[in-house]
Each structure stands twice: as structure tokens, then as C-alpha cells.
Length: 263
Image (cartoon, rainbow, N blue to C red; front, side):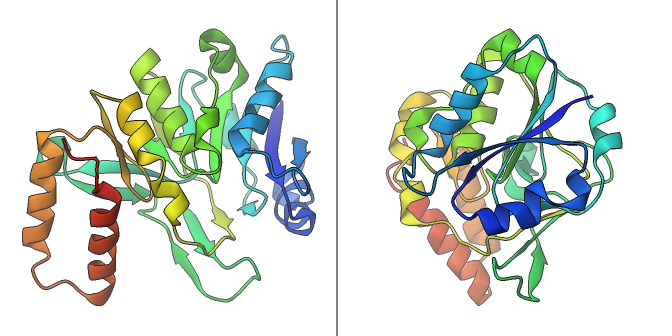
């Protein structure tokens, strides 16, 4: 069984520490793209790998950030995955209210600062078996080469540096009915970052791309919200009449992200 990690790298010290020289990645092959000078969009380089791959050689592809750290041997996990599905380390789904409820994040992944600070936090609910979600966080996407070859799956190069994995999941679901699952994988994302305004600039494009669908990502909804999404926003507002300071920040961010999306 071949497992290949594909990463776009600007910090090779971090890449070697967390990916290529990580003991938990022994037995994997690595296909890094040196992006220190060109700063090419991530989906462009990911597609370059997919376009140049020899699909007669089956493999699991792990598209991961340079600061994504496996913290356990995943070889047994790969051996038992269904090749017809997409997999990720952390992802989002909607739960409650008839299937259009509040966002729930799943994944055995922690988040911490790039400099290895002591503060870590879980990104979502822990899982002991694959759990179906709508999309994954961009830090890790796992897909089998046979599925890529069968449907000519590619990343949307208009998304530059954000939402390209979330869109990959959405596009695969809409076009081919491919389902996405978070797997029990102990790992850490050493980014410690929050969403930037750059991410939200993609929302009008995604609204046009998905005129009949709405998806939930790690940081925002995207696509064209239906009446259910509008109702959900009202329900959340009622539930959060007296929000904590952190809840208030999240609500404000959600409102900002939703501007121009509601139809």
C-alpha cells in the first residue's frame, strides 16, 4: 500500500519537523512543492501533482499543510478505508433542527501555535470511527488515486489559498455523490490561526458556483443558503440571547461572513 503526502511548502523547517521527518509518517512517500519564491496558489500546485501522476500506480493521497503533524501511525487506518469516499482529519457537519442545525466540528485534532506553544485546543468532537461530514478543514484531505482517476477530480484554482478543500468536498458531492468522512486520526495543526478577510472574499464566487446548495465549512457557510439557513440563523439568535464573549465574537464573524449570501 502506497501513501503519498503532498504539501505546498514555504517553511521547510516546519515541513521536515511535522511531515517528512515525522516518525509517524515512516513508510510514506513525499511530494513537496517549494513555494518560497513563487507563492503559487495551493490548488494550482495540488492540481499539478494530480495532472502528472501515473494512475496505473494506486495510492492514497494525503494533501496536507506543512504544519500538519500526524501523532500516530496511520498505516492500519489506510488499509481499511473505503476507496470510494473522501476522508479528512477534521470536518464540519450540521446537526439538529431536521438536518440544517448548528455547526458541529469533528476530529481528533488539536490546534496550537507554530512555535510549539503549550496552549492546545481540540478542534471538535472526538471520533472513534469514521463520521460523515459536509466538508473538511483545508489542513488535511485524504483521497484514493482510483477515485481521482475515475471522476477526474481536481481542485478549483480560483480559490487560491482558502476553501479549496471544502470546495473539493462540495464539488465531489454535487457532481458525483461522493461522501466525506472524518476519520479517527490523532494529529495536530500547528497554525494557531484564525480566518482572514481573504477567505470571505471567495463567498460571492461560491454562491454563483452552487446556486442550489449550501455547505458548512470550518469557518463559514458557502454556496446559496436556503430558507432553512435563514431559519437556523434566527434559531441561533434566540439561543444566544445572552452569549458569552467568545460566542459574541463567533456570532459577529458569522454575520460578517453571511453578508451578501442570503437570497
